[in-house]
Length: 130
Image 1 (cartoon, one colour):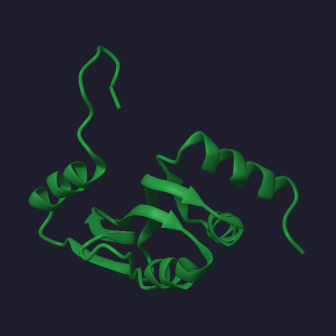
Image 2 (cartoon, helix red, strand yellow; image 1 turned 180 degrees about the horizontal axis):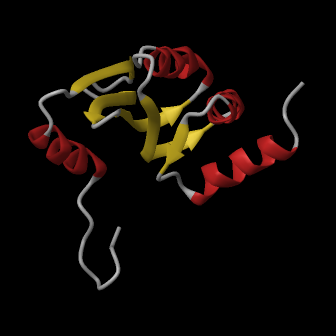
């Protein structure tokens, strides 16, 4: 991937590592191991930025991991703004899209998502699942 001006963009994990170096309140947790040891289907990194808690999500938000994402958001202390940064999300299935739409309705900011995820959220906002 390249940014404007032709400069290479750092991989998401490097961007998160940069945030980690600057934030003493960083918590990294991962779930959903793949066949390759050390590789995860879903990785979440939580950090504080003033009164906001930001959860960086990397990988795929699929049915089996929906409860993990929900739990991470629900663990944010009362009174803190909640933001999910989806820069590193590569895929969202129907269960993941339903979760993200529900979180957004509950006041969670969904940031840095792909056009694919933004389109899914718009569709769920227009036609919520029954």
